[in-house]
Length: 126
Image (cartoon, rainbow, N blue to C red; front, side):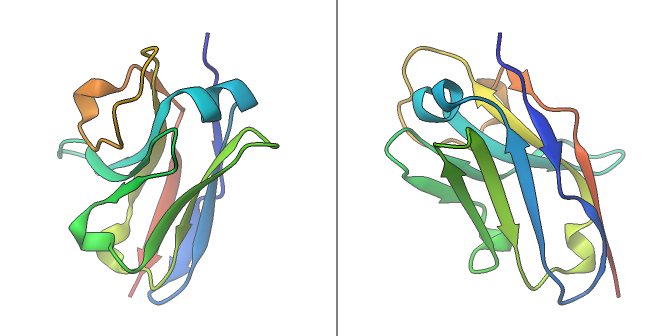
């Protein structure tokens, strides 16, 4: 069973930064595809950034150059570094794991992920 515990959300002004953390296990962060998604009420969950077992990444266009996904294997933790935040980045952010045995590459397809964290709220004010 994969367990994911997120933290790091909060309220910031536009232009500010936050770092989200998703604590799991060393096995999880080295064995599976990992990703961050976000969702606002009334909208579909959106893929933000993904990383595969070879540390290849995929970043959605709207956050390229501002957000970075990474993992610390020793700590069993997935991160999302968010800089130059905008009000449009306001959402609940979720980390996710594709629990299949083989990770073919980083994916922002929500249907591929079967383990989810509880979410952490990010609010950006103008």
